[in-house]
Image (tube, rainbow, N blue to C red; front, side, top):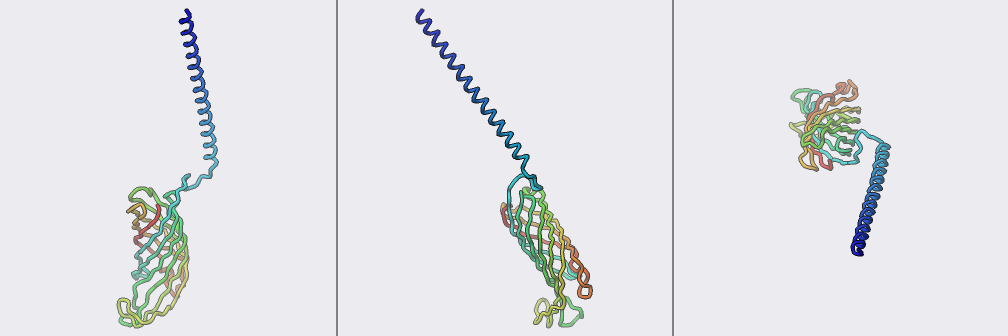
Length: 232
């Protein structure tokens, strides 16, 4: 009897301790769930109070430094340009920065057979806005827009000998202008730090003095390519 009573007491104690431990685990489990719920609620309030932006909630910031070259025509004469760009990239999808380009046209003769020729030179630059569509794909599209100002000059080249050998350059006329240049580019992700872009744009400038130039000699299409290096 004593042994039986002793075994009953031990079994009762073990059962009680087991139930108590289960209650303890359940108690802490409930507390954990409550803390998780509170944390989730606080995160939701914080996220809902954050300012929503066009570039999304992310904070990824990249950049690139680019070199470009392009072809166009000025008053019907072949012209070439080269430029550089420095821009920041917000969340992979929007580049904002500054760009500048210089240009020159081929020499031309007003009077055939003379040793005096003329050409156009100048440059422009300004603010760059460039939305980028599906930037993480190997091939994607961007829409660069340049808003700025520049200048153009018509120069007289004396003792000219084709193609570019002359002894004196004299600037006859020069004008300043405002410019807007929307464009489209197809970009290739050559490497994580390098992109190749091919595309075209259309230059729109304010009118120049018709006595010195055609009203808008720079207006027209231009096509070219560029290399971009940075963190995309």
